[in-house]
Image (cartoon, rainbow, N blue to C red; front, side):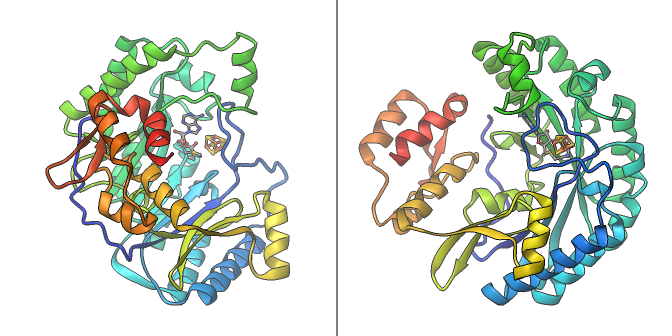
Amino acid sequence: MQPSMVNMKANPSAFAVYVHWPFCLSKCPYCDFNSHVRHGGIDETRYLRAYEREIASLAERIGAREVSSIFFGGGTPSLMQPSSVQTILDAIARHWNIAPDVEITLEANPTSVEATRFRGYRAAGVNRVSLGVQSLDDAALKELGRLHSAQEALDAIAVARSIFERYSFDMIYARPHQTLATWAAELRRAIAEAAEHLSLYQLTVEPGTPFFGLHAAGKLAVPDEDRARDLYDLTQAVCADAGLPAYEISNHARPGAECRHNLIYWRGHEYAGIGPGAHGRLNIAGKRYATETEKRPESWLMRVEARGAGVTVDDRLSAGETADEYLLMGLRLAEGIDPQRFSALAGRPIDPNRVSFLREQGTVELTAAGRLRVTQSGFPLLDAVVADLAA
Ligand SMILES: C[S@@+](CC[C@H](N)C(=O)[O-])C[C@H]1O[C@@H](n2cnc3c(N)ncnc32)[C@H](O)[C@@H]1O
Ligand code: SF4
């Protein structure tokens, strides 16, 4: 990862709202997100009432805030009617102030049907879309179980470009059969279509998914560690050359065009999670809480209708837990973390012996401004580095 220091100033009072829409047209065989297929359809109006209620209860609990980012994630939020997106945005605006430069992102699948709704989302207030392109190769899209072709994805990108000020798309690499040469060509093609932001994820074979079973049975060959590392290095080099350096381990942007919403997570700020299976981190009366809502859509719905909120986990985080989370999330960023903020949160500094050891290994470095960050060669070992520092 080429270090890209994010221009946008960290704002400690930044507050984001994440809205999870948990429905998809079909389940992709690699996906372990909280996404569900309902062949009989759903009662969208009834769900909307529940989203409105959950927003109202949360606002009652935490009080006034200024919202700097709203993110509709999924699942497939582009299956929602634009009027539903409008209803949820109106509910958020009824309870909290909305920052004049608010970022409102909606995740969309790039089928032609979904692209027809883009203008409606824009009219509702969405000003950024994130498209799940995944690949520009039809055979790979088929293997990933996607419902769109490469051409449909390109068409959806063109529609997004004509309607939204900002758009991004996701690609998955380190896929079966992928060589350095085929990925380099596909990535360059993707960069030619990208404006300011790209999310590039290495395929993870998640337990419980059909890909996991196929992999265990020897029927799905994914690149080994060395090949994955080469693909990662190639990705960093090609993107940096094109002016899209990584600002996070899987996210690339032109400086200044980073996704504000995700920065709020990685910088350890505050966010509310609305909808089935949404996570939140809330700061209330000087204490930090980790919240999770009921994952199963129908159970979430009934819970909200009965109690006003779908929350099932509401844990007060200790100082140590809050500090470790800051470390865990912040070290994903090219800008790294502020060791003084860690000390203030934890009530102790990061172990200097561990820092020295990792610096000697070349996996972390201290910047001139005194921030601690993972080096380019350390990024593929991020989990081990974090485990070492947090221990
Ligand atoms: C949960 S999806 C939601 C977006 C939308 N439903 C879609 O699929 O286009 C968010 C992103 O996570 C990434 N993703 C999901 N499962 C993954 C996996 N097992 N390995 C790598 N990336 C994955 C995909 O790039 C996807 O676009
Ligand atoms: S990858 Fe996206 S479309 Fe596919 S099942 Fe997961 S959330 Fe749904």
